[in-house]
Image (tube, rainbow, N blue to C red; front, side, top):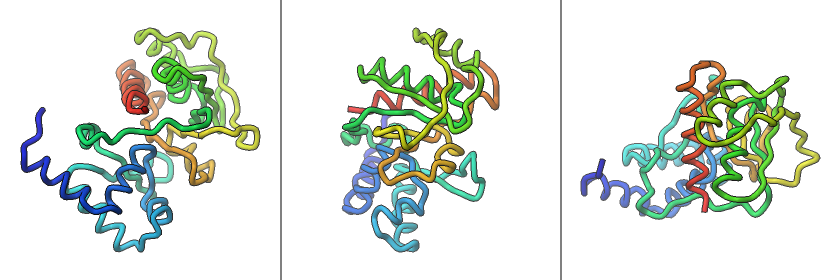
Length: 214
């Protein structure tokens, strides 16, 4: 649906402040908690809250509760809100490892999608890997022309990786005590729901994120 001139003007006004534009550029890479944003931009809590309120009123960002630590909130871009402004995810200079808790669905799908769209190798790992890739993830991949039949979960070890880490579940992000260079994409766990639609939804969210990488 095409946005009205009023809505478009609100977005341009919100991004007219250099700090808010920098926040949006950062969120194009990674969902962030407010505390992470405050540290990255050296902002006091009340000033950060003001900037986030402006961005939310313009429909650019949204805040949501963590699926891991329920006390934590994250901030992310609203899908499609700034696509016509050329905001995209810059390609990391290092190889990518996608991490979720069990390495049985989201991170496996993300690695396969990265290879499809970006054309470079990507790995996946888990903070508490399962015994096998979930059949729902294998089936979802097959429905979209990808093959996870030979994929196997493996443990994540930060000390053995000189890569860009992209966590794709809130719990893994919080367990890893992320570094400032890590990315986080908050994707709901399809295994917890178990339906084909849930796996397809996770696939579509990952696909959209990776298609935005340039």
